Image 1: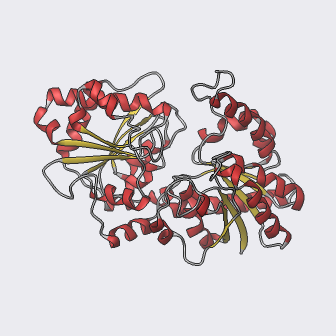
Image 2: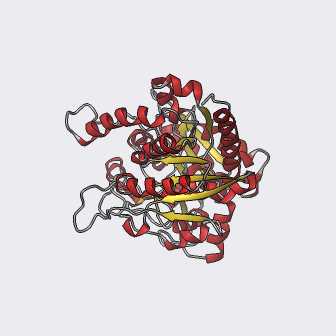
Image 3: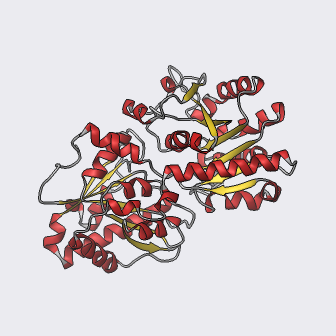
Length: 431
């Protein structure tokens, strides 16, 4: 069995979304001929609040090496875990490589600042490496054209680091093609020589088994009452704000057209704040207030634990998924929603891979958006009304034919196959 070092700045008990890509892969990779070793930062140095229950979701017997990581206290020189753990991760990987303990290094970003470690190990020890894109690296976020702003500096640093980091890569993976399309256009040699593969985040049924065994009660809403509780759990990205506003406009139209139904609906937003732990960082409530639907919306801006998130998903009446006006964006929360056993109401870009995922699995309803157009408020209201009055439940449908490709196990199998091809190309001298 070949061995792969999976490098991730965060890993359980980290509660950040990025920690789960490597966690889920490491559970299933051994089934497909690859033994994972996780190299990650020191959890004692994480800035975010940890979730100890997450450690119960890590594959038994998995070798996890916590690399030395610079602290942020008493003086916070830099916050990004990739910077603070870079030297430690490099030294751990160098030790593994020198001892012939690994056959491949795959760095999952973000943190983007960890990406160069793969090429450094390759240059010194000849071990093939790859980079996994959970998000695009070079991205023109608002503010990048303001000289000397944080966004401006991050963008320019990314344009310098990315081409160096991907040069010589044997494998490039991503959540969907759009996540790496820009990089491949800017680096045609990488596009020509590297193995390119895409696989979703997926979600593991085992996660839900643990949640159900804990039998926790939700704390954002009553376990059972006369209301229809819909929950959105996850960050609100800049390119997703317009989709949120279209949804809220739909709530206003529903309130006007069907006031009794609207009075029953309560939409809960969690983790949508300006910062992970800021209880006053509301971004949804002010917009709901401006539209006159504050009574239909509840916002818990702080992130809650992953286990608590799954608890609320499984105890809700429906799960809300709001995407982005960017075609490449496929929210990782889609897979959690689909396995929750609750019907899914989604608003996604028409080119997002998640559209077919939801529809083909029978998990719910999707309204599509584009960069240039959003559904009218009346159309959103009508779709919501049909959705709520339909009284549908999913569950067993999530295991329908073809859904395996969307699970974490299917994602790990696709990764293992891509690794096999990348190793073959590297051995043949074509990568």
